[in-house]
Image (cartoon, rainbow, N blue to C red; front, side, top):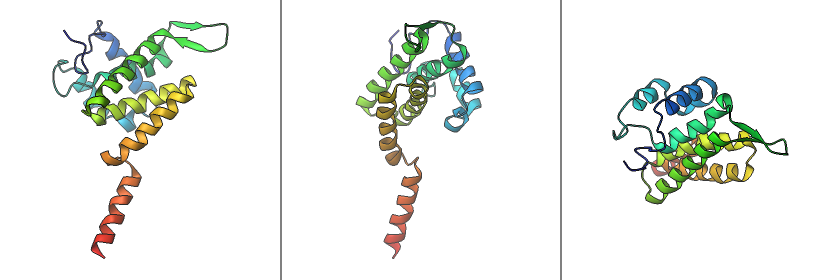
Length: 164
């Protein structure tokens, strides 16, 4: 079994992503703006080799995000900074899958969704450099994907100018 964006070998326990995804949808106020809950949960029940199975970057990003509400492995260093190994592991895996998928240019919309989730996690953790990097990518990717208000207005403006 290979560790690819379609088959996350790191999820040796089948219940971890399911519990984390349920927690993500239940607790994250932006979840319903990014995904349709019913459709996503249905796709999670597909075999990992199915083309509609969620991208590994999304699953790992959801696990990192959900850890804000469920983690019991918090460690505090001498400073009052929260450290969650589970979340850190899944954030790193999500970032790895994002980088790997970006280099191929495949499944860019799924990568954008994973980046949005991961950006919110970085924001909640106070990791400002990563927030800045991921927010920049999201802005650059949103226009060619046609998911930004600017892209819609640009299309309307270009259409109006062509008709004139």
